[in-house]
Amino acid sequence: MAAISKERVLPASFDEKRFGEAMDAMAAIVGADNISRDSSHGNLEGPAGQLCYGDVWPLGGGSADHTPSGAIRPQSVEEVQKVVNIAGRYKLPLWTVSRGKNLG
Image (cartoon, rainbow, N blue to C red; front, top):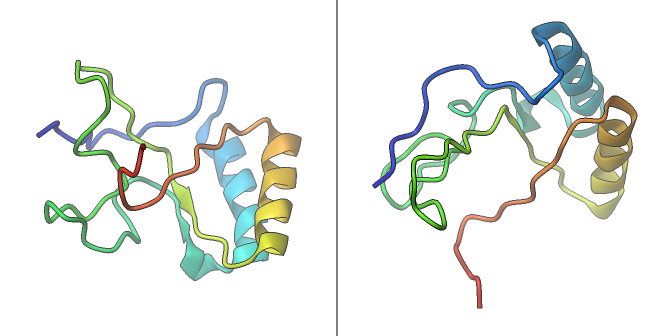
């Protein structure tokens, strides 16, 4: 099982202020309870008992750390569209994820 990073990770070219502004804008859309501002907050318990958004079974193995900077949990198509719009405005990279590894 891969180790999940405990170190704070931000997207390239982001500092805490800019990342916080983008997350604040998204929280205004989906609600503060549907925003995780780091990888270890707000997640339901995973199949390996993890309580974070990091991938305990990363594809391809190796030592690459793919720890997310945070998570947004939109509840509707309209919220997804607004979140994508905000991400585009801030040039914040997004990665979609589901709980499973249904790759085929």
